Image 1: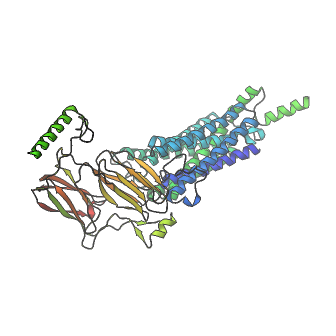
Image 2 (image 1 turned 90 degrees about the vertical axis):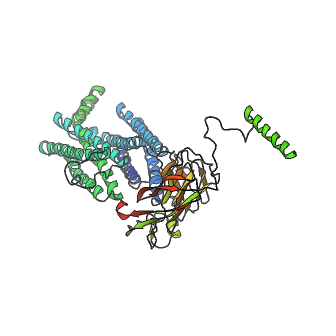
Image 3 (image 1 turned 180 degrees about the vertical axis):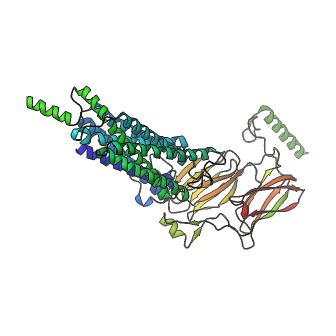
Length: 326
Length: 259
C-alpha cells in the first residue's frame, strides 16, 4: 500500500506542478528566465532565493517543482520495477518517466525558442498526459483495483461513454492550450454571449479558436453529465463510480464558471490559473471513471496472463481455495 | 611643380590600386556589398523641425505595481505610472518617433560606430523610445541592483532574450533589418517596455518633454514623414525641403485614436 500512497503523493505533486505552470503562463513569465537548464547562469538548484523576483519567481519555482516531480517519478518507476508483479504496470512506470523527461525537454525548448506555440501547446498537452499516467499508476496500485473492492462492472455503454468523454475532455484541454498560447483568450470579449450574439459576426483564427473552445465546453459538459447520469441511474450503489462521476459533474460546472470569469476578468491571474487546474481535475475524474469501467477487461487480461481468475473477490476465493488444498 | 608631381603620383597610385583590386582599407566594395555612402552636401542640407501634440485630455497612464521586486520599490518612491502618455500642460506629447519613411531613394548612409545605449535604471528603460541604424551597436546596460532580462520581440529582425543578473552588465546587439517599431520588454518586471525604430538612414528623432523634434542635415527633396506613438498609432505628412530650408511641421494625436 505504500507504493499506492507514494503514487498518490506524486499525483498530488503533479497537480501542484500544473498550478505552477498555469501561473507561469497567466503571469506571462515564461521568458523571465532566458536560459535553460541554467537560471541566469546559476545551476537551477543553487540559484539564490532572494533573486526570485517578479516573473522569475513563477518560472524558477515551476522549474524547481518540475525537477522535484521528475525525481519523484524516477523513484516511482524504480519502485514499480522492483515491487510490482504485473509487467505492464512496471512498464507504465517507465512510460511515465519517459513522459516527464520529454516534458522537461519541451519546457526547455519552449524557453530557448521564445515560446513557439506548437512547442508550448505540446508542453501543456504532455503535462496532462503525464498527470493521467501518474494518476493511473495510483489507481492501478490501489487496494480497490488490486482485488479488495467489489466485482468490477461490465457495462459496454459505460465504457464507450466514459472513454469518449475522457477523450473529449483531453481534446478540449488541447484547444484551451492552443487558445492560451496563441493569445486567443480574449478574442471574444464577452460572456456568455459572443459579441452580443450567439455566433461571431466576423471570423479570425483566434476568434474561431476561442469559439471552438466554448462550443466544445458545451459538448464536453453534456458528455460528462451523460456519463454521470448513466452511473447515477445504473450504479447508484457503486461509490467507486458515483464519487468520481459526481465530483466530475460539479467540477465541470465550476470549470465553465471559471472560463466565463476568465474572460470577464480580463484573464485575472488567479482565475485563469484555477481554470487550467480545474480542467486537469475534470480530466482526472473522467479518467478514473473510464479506467474503472474498463477494469473488468483488465482483470480478464490479467487472469489470462496469470492463468488465474479475475481480480476481486473471485481472485481471493481462488487463492484461499488453493491455500486450503495445499 | 613639386605639389603637382606628388598629386600625379598619388592619383596614379590610386588608379593602380583600384585596377589591381589590392589594398585593404581603401579597397572598393565588392559587388555584393551596398554602394558606398554618398555624403550629404552640407551647403544645401535642410532640416525638419516640429512638435508632436496631443489634442484633448490624454487617457490616464496605467499604474505600475512594483511590489514583486523590493529593489524596484526601493528605487521608486510614490505612485508609479506607465510612460504611455507623457503629455505636457500645453498638450506637448513626448516619446513620438518621427522619421523619414520615404523619399531618400537608393541613397546609403554611413553607420555610426558609436553605440546607442539602452539603460535599465529604476526598473524602467531609458530611453523609452529611441532610434538606431541598421548595423549600429545597441549597448544594453543593467544599471539596477536586480535581475533583468532583455527580450526583444521584433517582427523582421531576430528575436533575442538575454539575462542580465548583475548590476553593471552590458550586452551589445546589432540589428540587420529596418523595422519600425520594435518592442523590448522585461519578463521579470512586466511593466518595463521600450520601443526602437530601426532604420537604414539617420533621419529620425524622438519628441522630447516639450513635444519638439528635429531632423537635421536632410538633403533637399520631397519626403514622407511618419510620426509613431505607442498608443496613438502612426500618421504621415508629405514635406518638401528646399536647399538650406528649415521646414516646420506638427503632428497631432487624438484620444479617439488611442485604442
